[in-house]
Length: 172
Image 1 (cartoon, rainbow, N blue to C red):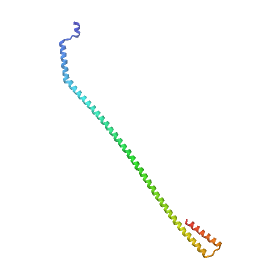
Image 2 (image 1 turned 60 degrees about the vertical axis):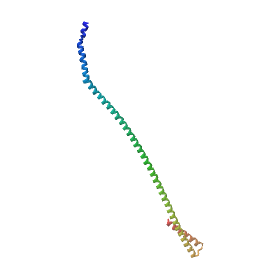
Image 3 (image 1 turned 45 degrees about the vertical axis):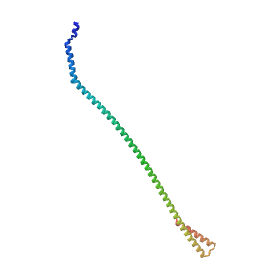
Image 4 (image 1 turned 180 degrees about the vertical axis):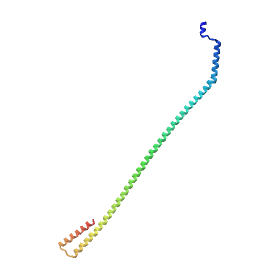
């Protein structure tokens, strides 16, 4: 043991002193270094946890806001589409109304035109009848004034027809 003890040469008093010093150092470090350090580390851990929690809340709020934004945009798009459909319907109704009014007005104009043409035709017929009566009376009066043979009679009728054709040609 002498040789083996020399290698380790442990003095129990020194060992007890070293263990006591180590324990005192540990207690001092624990009280003045580890506790404040652990407190700082716990505070930092709490701050990190709060930061993570705040980040999660912010992320959740951002997701909720993004969802609301999408819903608002979808609603606005839907309203826009509905407004466009409404405007198209109103445009179609206006177009149909304008076409209907134009057709009615054209029908009225055609009807007035027909009535005007009919009146003018009736006036022309009355005028033509008057002229025919006048010519017939003129021819009859000439025929009565002189006694006609067949040749003269043909001549008077041919003159009458020629005058009638001349008046009709001049009237056109």
